[in-house]
Image (cartoon, rainbow, N blue to C red; front, side, top):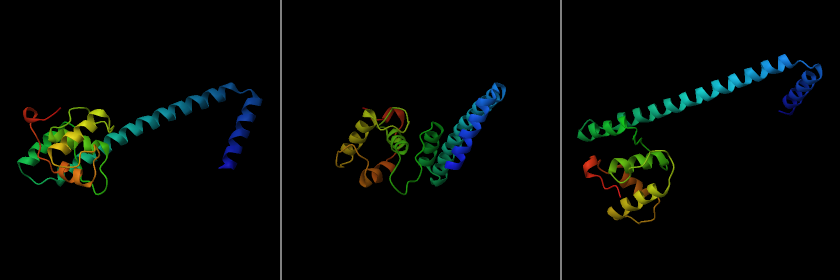
Amino acid sequence: MRKVLGLGLALVGVLALSGCSTVCRKQVNQINELKSQVSSLKSEIQYKDDQITQLRYSVSQAPSEKFVASQAAVSMGAAIPEVKSRPKAKQIQAALKNAGYYNGPVDGKIGKRTRKAIRNFQKDNGLQVDGKVGKDTWAKLKNAPEKKVSEQKVK
């Protein structure tokens, strides 16, 4: 790593001494173009990851009325994929939304609205009301029946 850094600094020094501003401008333009391409690729990867998550969720559901309701939630971007360890914030928000306790964006940020929804869910389901999604809360939340918009308990 130090060799590469040293070579890079040496190259910059040679270019600076030679006064070749055209080469420098070309390199800056190439670097900016590459940064733009990397940013675009990162966005595509995130989009594909979201699609994979939604597909995994839809495949994991048994064909039933619940499956049809789940498909509606998936199409709205509220997928709840299978979780083997601790659930992610987006999974918690999607499950709360499907259960009718959360109406905010599924953005992966556990804020005031999400914590309030967790506490309301815990209270309504006889769980310890601490605003945290532990094993017991997640076990009930991920299996909570989906509510139609008119039935939701968004508070």
